[in-house]
Image (tube, rainbow, N blue to C red; front, side, top):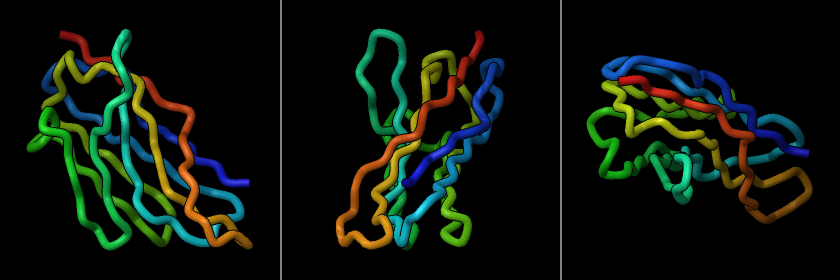
Length: 121
């Protein structure tokens, strides 16, 4: 079984910073692309940023220049550094990863449980 466990969410004032972490654990053999999504109340889940195994990154226009995604392949962990936070960034943030389990040749999508980021004005 494979798990993604997020941490680092919380309450922050507008203009502040937070760093989210997501660690994959369990019987996995490889991780391809890792990503962060978010879902605000009453809205659809949206991609925030993703990063390939070799470090190619992609950001939503709304977070470019403020958020930075990175990963540590030795720790099976992806990070999201969020700076200059705005109330509009308030959402539940979900970690996502394409993971190949031991004994399987397929890469399957896995999700974390989500962590709440609340930005006050």
